[in-house]
Length: 107
Length: 124
Image 1 (cartoon, rainbow over the protein chains, first blue to last red):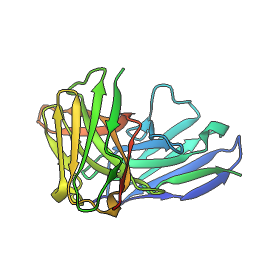
Image 2: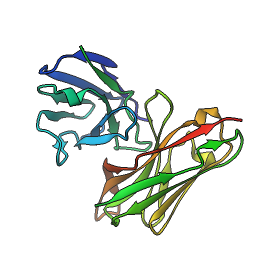
Image 3: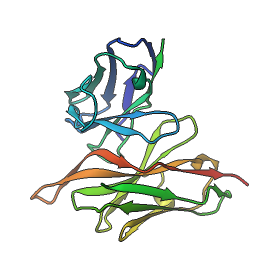
Image 4: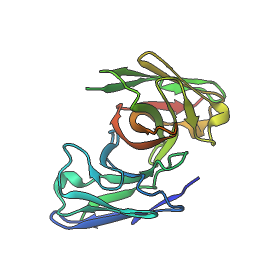
């Protein structure tokens, strides 16, 4: 299985901050890397597809980059509604594994 | 607009078999498969497996010996046998975009439509 390692596991930040979350795959996954946002009690929501493709309706303050093994999710200016848990997922090979999540909390 | 709705028993006894369904409304296409994902209490996301509209499946090796997935029209089904407390989780179904190549291979992208999830508790 491809292991996905996110860092940090948790993060405290303030509204307006720029935040970077990283995800590293144990093997190269080209750009088959996707980012999700999950708020308590709800299903995950796809933010970014294929490493850098912003999903319709997702604010442009979210961006993704990377290829191979290393990827980043960037939130350019945190808004109150962005406090949530973020997961990366690879679909390069099955099982389509997830990172352990990054919980973004209000400072 | 595609919507997904999971349904399940809520409570299952250890060693019994879990049956879940996911109803797809709003249509489907060969460009999309469906996946099952679960999330144990306070934990992260675990990929269970996928099924295509033609019934092709692939599943997590950690569950494969106990797992069966099927699709009948607009209804997905998941069966997990010999459950234990470790199977207590919220179970989601989701749609995943698939790209098919002339070679016959295919690749997967992100899961863009999710159901709201159904909670399953394994307890005697």
